[in-house]
Image 1 (spheres, rainbow, N blue to C red):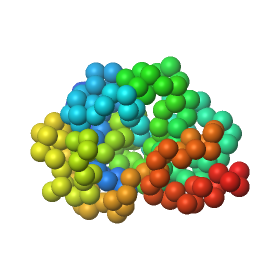
Image 2: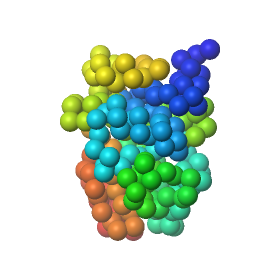
Image 3: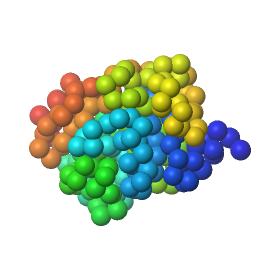
Image 4: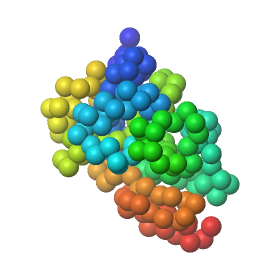
Length: 195
């Protein structure tokens, strides 16, 4: 059994895994399972009023869990996979715990082969949040992982050093708002102005 299979099995069992993305290492668990989502908040020491995003392997798979407008779909087709989190209206399957009770949820399709393979194998959206204790620096190498995170993860996937180091840009296409400027923020600004 490969590490990837182990990681997918761990997610299915309700455990957490650390996985690489094109920006920083992420902490993944079954995003539609309220208990798993609670554990992610707990391990990170994250404020529960701050929502989490989910990662999926493709735009069609994302559309099973969100209701996207034509403009949001065009945006996704342009920027995903990539270091961008798109806020869309969630469908009923997405739990309140993930979105902190909000109507929108962040969708992430990482531009990283190992992350995409994990999303594919897991067969369910996985949490897309940096693998660090809140307030501490994000990890770009496994050596940088906080001990608390390493301890909480059933499987740690080694993708070497991540490319970006800068977190994904979080954008609400419907209102044309960038909530967090990160990778590709200028290109996103330009697209929002043009479309």
